[in-house]
Amino acid sequence: MTYSDRTRWQAFSIAVAVASLTILDLSKVNVGIPAIEDAFGAGPTEVQLIVAGYVLAFGVVLVPAGRWGDLNSRRRMFLGGLIVFLAASLFCAIAPSVEILIGSRILQGVSAGLLMPQVLGLTQQLFQGPERGRAFGIFGAVIGLSTAFGPTLGGLFVSLAGDDLGWRLIFWMNVPLVMLLWPFAYKLLPRTQPASDGPRDLDIVGTLLLGATVLALMLPFVLTTGSPDDNPARWWFLALFAAVAAGFVAWERRYLASGRTAIIDFALFRIRSYRNATLLAMAYFAAMPATFLTLTLFLQMGLELAAVYAGMVTIPFALASAVTSFYSGKVVEKFGRRIVVVGLVGVLIGFSGAVAAALFLPAIAVPWAMALAMLIAGAGGGAVIAPNQTLALAEVPVTSGGVAGSIGQVGQRVGTAVGLAAATSAFYATIYAEEGSFSQLVVYQDAYRNAAFVVVFFVAIALTMALIDLRARVAGRVPDRV
Image (tube, rainbow, N blue to C red; front, side, top):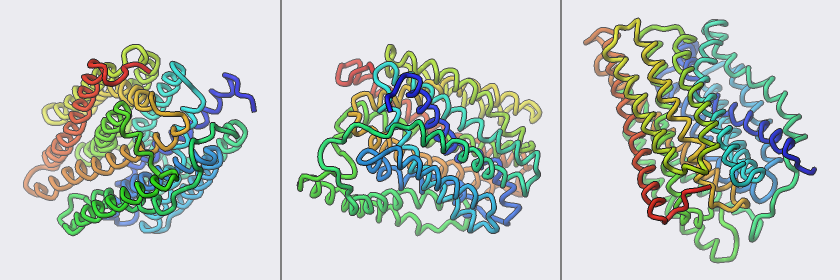
């Protein structure tokens, strides 16, 4: 197939639509959590596995899926991932028990891990130069909309269909959408791609070691809920992580020395722009999903807002981030890392304003003030994801686009797991400590405040990384243009 401008953008639109489904399933489940708790009598551990189990599986699968797509066919991996996503969504929708729901959510995470690196690799394959910046701008806008509109969409289903059926519709909606998108993906996605340099073998042992490394790193955070029943022994997984990671590095070095292609191209980390952007995104994504989860929990459980209204508070974030993401993708070539720094400052201001609104305003005014604060945060957030993604891949060879994008996505998923664990454990630990001593509103205000401190801390780390990278670019050690 000869790829005209029109065909390239059509293929890109299908890829981004699918990416939005995977991100929606990270955020729209949040407002369904109280209904799922009631339906199955789920406790904090089950809730954490429903939310973070998806992230865990997502992170474990990303790099091998990206590597396989780079070496063989991003198109085939994409189409197969869509089928798995369809099946997993169906299993979630009809789950008769919380255990089946958790298992289905993990399978959903696996499918998302198959899909997302192909989206990033295809975007880098289809576009070059300023056009790539615009593409990532659209990608960032869609991801921002999906993240922030997810709670509203989930809340709408719960409010319209009731608690028991509403949370199931959150998963049912994926089924017709995937069935609609699959034929277009089959027709439009490129059947060929640039050949990868070097040997085309897939490092099976390295893949298994990498999966074990990511699993051991993320699992103790996934199992952290803030409940008094949390088992301290879970932190021993970090010792296992250190041991397996050392074994993985040793194996990969030996594998490379034999003239074969490793599962991770360690040369990517010698690219300063890629390394800095990956660390920044890791910190930023530690903050974002945790923000939306704890905010909706506070609104639903503390202020007793209906799910749909709690979700609507994030709409201003979605709209503002979509606009600024689209335009930031256009101007990143001109302004470089500076636009990310400005965006992160806006996120800090907005999130801090949301905390102030929750603590100091009358309950009736809190949702409106938080919506305004989220508008400011969204305007800043839209100037973070797309430009940072563009800057991250600016010096990465196209033949490594999938694995480079998937490594970055692993960082984001690890960040998400850490952020969710830290923020939700701060939230629930406060409730366990204060419940019965203060009014419900005060307890949930304190819980949200403590969770928000965690979120702001991660945003501050992202801002610090952006400033470090900007300094390197000003000094000429990193190119500040796409």
